[in-house]
Length: 352
Image 1 (cartoon, helix red, strand yellow):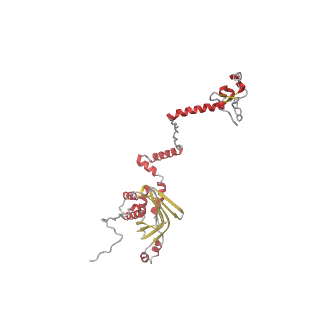
Image 2 (cartoon, rainbow, N blue to C red):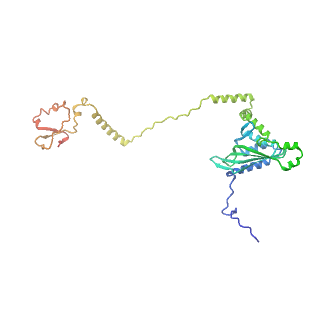
Image 3 (cartoon, one colour):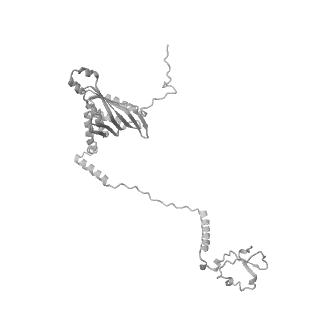
C-alpha cells in the first residue's frame, strides 16, 4: 500500500498548527475577480434591478467612476456618480458585447487608515462582441481603484485611463470571406472607438447633462414636486449658500483663576510684608516731612560713654542727624558736663 507523499505546507484542520486562509479583505484583486464572475453570470433577461444589485455589491453609495481617453477631436474625461454606474455597465452589453472582464497585471497596493488603493499600470478590459461581427476587443490602460477597508470592501473611486486598444478578428472569418471584397472592407473597419461602443459613448455624453441634474431628480422623487418647483428650490438654496457669510468660530470666554492663600502663612507673610513696606517707605520719603525721632535710626536709648574711658584707637561716633537738626532741642546741651560725653548709637563706638 503506497502512501501519498507528505506536503510540508499542508496543515490538518484538526492539528494544533492549523491556519485559516487569508480573507479577501486583504486581497483587493480578488474583488475584481468576483466582479468578473458576476458579469459573466448576467443573462439577457437581466433588468435594472439586477444592475442595481450589482452596483450595490461592488460600489459604495458615494462612489464615482471616471473614464479618460483621447478621441479624434481631443482628450475626453467623463465622471459619473453612483446612481449612473449601473446604467453604464448595462450600455456596454447593449452595444453588442456578450462578455466583459478585466485583467490586472503587476498591480501595486497601498494600505491607508480607511481605504486601500490599487494602482495597475497594465490593465486590460476585454470585451467579446457578437455583432455586427464576431470580434474580440482588448482595451489597455491604467486602472486606479480605491476600496474601503472593511468587510464589504467596495469600490469608492474607479479611474480607468485608456491608452490603446486592439480589435482581433478570427482568421477563420477572414478565410470564409476572402473572395468577397465588400465583406473584407467591412471587416477592416473598427467597430469601437478607443475600445468603447457607440452606445457607451452616447451615454457618457448624456451623463454630462444628467450628472448635474441628480439633485433635481432626487428632490422630485422625495418631495413629489414639479420640475419647475424643484429647479426654483435648488437655485434658491444655492443662492443662499453663496450669499450667506461664512460662520465665524466661537471664542470661549477666558476665566480668571484665583490664587489660593494659605491661612497659616498668610498672616505671617502679611505682617512681615507690612513691616518691610513701612521701613521701605520710611527710607524713600524725604527727611523734611518726617519728625526728629524718625530721622535718627536709634532702636534703643543710646548709652553715654565717658570721654576719659575711651581708648585712643576709638574714634568719635558719627552723628547721623542732619546739621540743621541738632541735639539742643532735646536739652542735652544744657546738661552739666555735656562736653565730657559723646553719644554712641546702638551702644557701641566706631573704632579705626
